[in-house]
Amino acid sequence: MKSCAVLGATGSIGKSTLQLASDHPGLIKIEVLSAHRDRIGLLDAIEKHLPTRAYLTGSSWEDEDRERAKASNCILEDDPQALKESLASGVAEVVIMGIAGAAGLEYGLSALESGARLAMANKEPLVIAGHCFQEAAQSHGGEIIPVDSEHSAIFQCLLGSNEDHVERIILTSSGGPFHGRSSDFASIKIEEALKHPTWSMGSKITVDSATMMNKALEMIEARWLFNLPLDKVEVSVHRQSIVHSMVEFIDGSVMAQLGVTDMQYPILYAITHPERFASSLPRLRFDEVLNLSFEPVNPFLQQAIDLARAHGEDPVRTIYLNGANEVYVQAFLEGKVGFDGIYAHLEAVVAESGSRSSAPNKVSDVLEYDQHARMISQKLLGV
Image 1 (cartoon, one colour):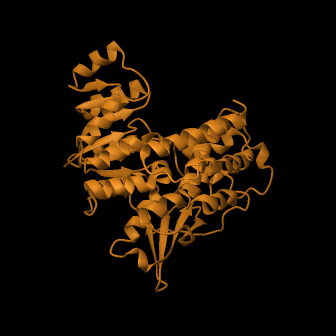
Image 2 (image 1 turned 60 degrees about the vertical axis):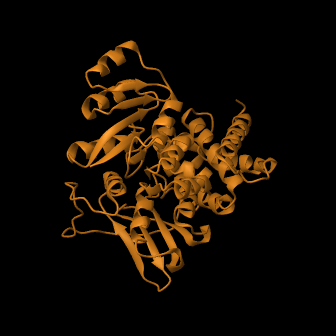
Image 3 (image 1 turned 45 degrees about the horizontal axis):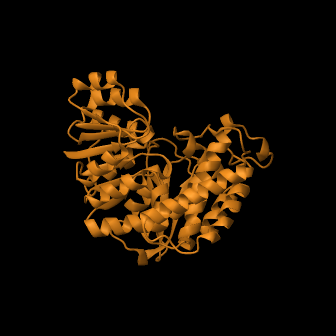
């Protein structure tokens, strides 16, 4: 049994992790839970999983919350710095990173500095600070195991190989809700963008899937995880979401990882690697008809992939691209920008990155550039 911290415990990744813990006693011992503002959801999780500590990073506990948590012998804290210090102290062997966007950057680094295994479900920290994460892992003996279903698939396909064996990796995509759409992207409504055809996720990542920016960021994430240039990273639309990604090797053979569409699978493997755990999760049925199709990305949505290729090798532009995307996704959800306007706004913000010509060497540089990107993004919105 491994000790585990679940960051973003009330989100989709956190809930999937806690469901695994409930369904498979003996898999992990929950030591730490965190959430940003969902006090009640976190208290419910505390009572069920009995962590030693629980943290709110964007709100404060009420007196009645502390009284309620006494029966669970759980210490409640609402200081983000305290969470960083707890992770850096080695409170958990495995840290599940389920915090949306770039907000989890410093928590992830704290976990790696303790020598822990960081199971990363959110790509943004690697996208904007991949070099910091790789350096932290190498310097302190930590390790990064991807939980994104696509990167988990690539990770598993590459076991026993090295980067010199790889011709290309193919990240599969459901295509989102607008794959078959040919026009009228300006009229897309918020509720349409939030109807993902396969996965149930938070609003930010669901909109990213609709614009294909999720896949663009995954391309940049793959660059850091697998030490491959972006010209070796491709995207194919696979509507059935059964093949989670593929690797083509230099001898021409292709290896794919298939499975039921459930995030518990990559979470489980990130916890148990290099071992396999005999789970009770549902199996893919090969005695039934499996129709597997692969298509190119929708030409309009290809703009996101083009942004990744144009800017993803530049560490400064990558920070601006990611920061701007977070601002404009939120702006779309608030009705301040149209779906089709997101791409042009992203290009405009990345163009401003030239004012920061030197590559970020440390986390403080990354955070400074990120804040500048968000400030410019807000300014262009007229906020």
